[in-house]
Image (cartoon, rainbow, N blue to C red; front, side, top):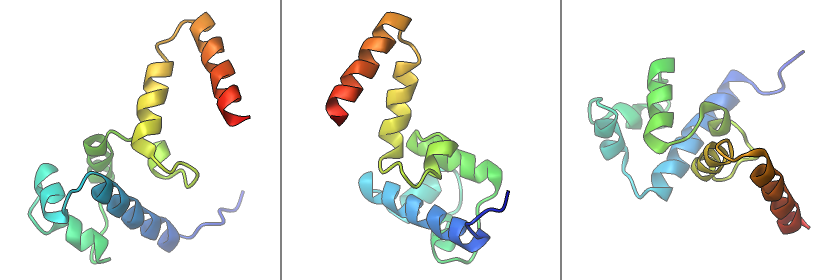
Length: 110
């Protein structure tokens, strides 16, 4: 299967998503860099296309914001941290409550 998204497009999406999450949490690149345990310019270099995060650092970014990596890259998920929280809680429901939750979701969507 051929992937329709190029490496450059993924990297731009990554930078855009980091920017979105920083804005949502009123966080500067400086504070995020230090919060991740890196030097003060770490995130700025990523946002300015001067470097890319390693897999370990990408996972640390996801963990910092409470976002699962799969939702981080899901273009259809506008608020990945909220979706992550909701799914984590849904997983704890018993079958009856889960079915009730699906009914409520369907009602909201209709």
